[in-house]
Amino acid sequence: MKYFTSDGLKLAYSMEGEGTPILLVHGFGSTHHVNWVETGWTRTLMDAGFRIIMADGRGHGASDKPHDAGDYALDAMTEDIIELLDHLGEPGVDIMGYSMGAMVTLVALARHPERFDRAIAAGVGENLLLPPKSPDAVVAALLAPSADDIADPEARVYRVFADQNGQDREALAACFAAVRAPYPVELLEQITRPVLVVAGENDPVGSPAALAARISGASSHVVPRRDHMRTVGDKDYKNAVLKFLEADI
Image (cartoon, rainbow, N blue to C red; front, side, top):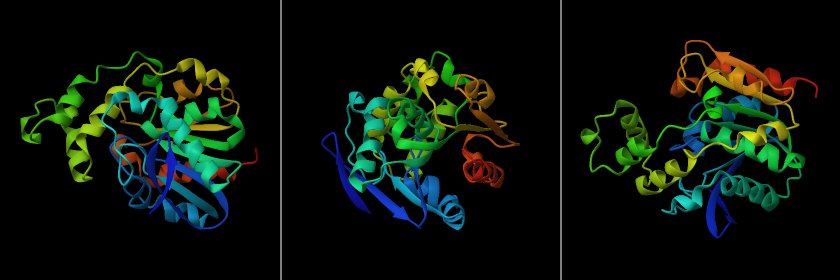
């Protein structure tokens, strides 16, 4: 791993391949390796002629892990990826984010359109347009002494995933509380770059088409028979992204 500094934090990143640069932004509770390497995405994109840039987001993986929810605002995480591009001297890249990474990606497109060409926002849908659910159950699950103490099945999934990845659960609890703030939906209308929105058919995030409809010129794709976790490495998701990236813009 290599490192750069953003907002006083030491953040880890990795690069693979040669060719057109694409920045990959992982989801909540994950890491660049779990989200993109283990699922075969790095190999898929390298075979398609892309040079891959990946970071462990603040609070995750090998990056610094503050425990204050105020450190996990979407704008702060957006500036982290801009700092990484500046650190690498990259004037513009394609970008793909999954779940929380997709939320960051869409903010980045609105705030810094000059730094991105094409974008994929995956693992998100219509629910991003709605008032968020309370984060309390998941925060409590992340901070519980044991996963066996968690009655809420959805919250338990977050805890088990965090444990599987060896994450700092106090940092993740702070991050989750911040990410569940109301999404800045008004920013979607400012996006001018080509965007593909992707979600699994059985993913409770809601319709990707409804979210894409709020972004000028955006398209959407549904991955058949897949939920939130199983969409990530699905061949249909990969094929849809490659088709989108190969199209003229």
